[in-house]
Amino acid sequence: MTETLHSPARAFGADSPLAYLLDLADQASGAPSDQEQRDDAETAAAHHVYQAYAYSLAGAVDAVAWQGYPAVREAGGRRWEASAVAWLDGGLWLHHTLRVTEADGASDVLTLIVPCTCGCGYVDIGLDSEDVLIDILTELRPTVGRSPHDDRDPLDCASVKTVPYIGHIGSPGSWR
Ligand SMILES: [Zn+2]
Image 1 (cartoon, protein in one colour):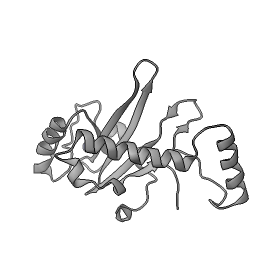
Image 2: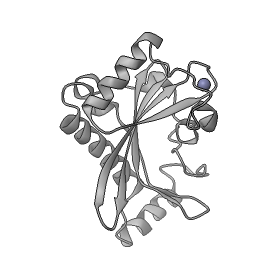
Image 3: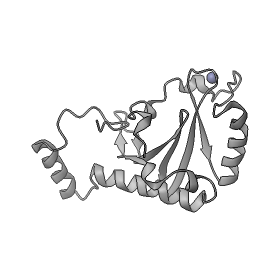
Image 4: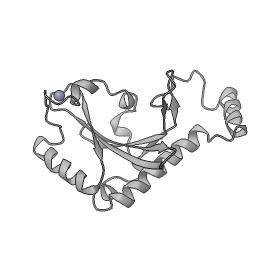
């Protein structure tokens, strides 16, 4: 299965005539194909990790561990940029995407997705730097990679009980 993170389920085969024709239309419009977006997302994620997390993530996450997903526009019009995820084992993921604004262009957004100790959901932790990552890992170490549940935190796991963009990723064993 090559189900994407946000896309509606595709009702035709990857090698079907319709897939070919839709790709053709993409190319004619000058827009990057889904596959190009996936490749670019994987490259951007690996590049960011090697640049900004040379001491930690670069040694832990192979470039080939990243799985890319094309950009998606939701029914409401919100656009999700292409993204890539890497499985860290133990229920933890890395998620990378680009935040694109007219003023600043593209900037990297790296998020650590950590299961909560309560078992009900995940907590998204934005990573700004390698120092932040090491601090977070130090906090996660006593709980062996679980984020301590916190009822008072409005951003805790209860607000992300189902994390939609990691819900359709293939089996964790598929990495590497
Ligand atoms: Zn919790």
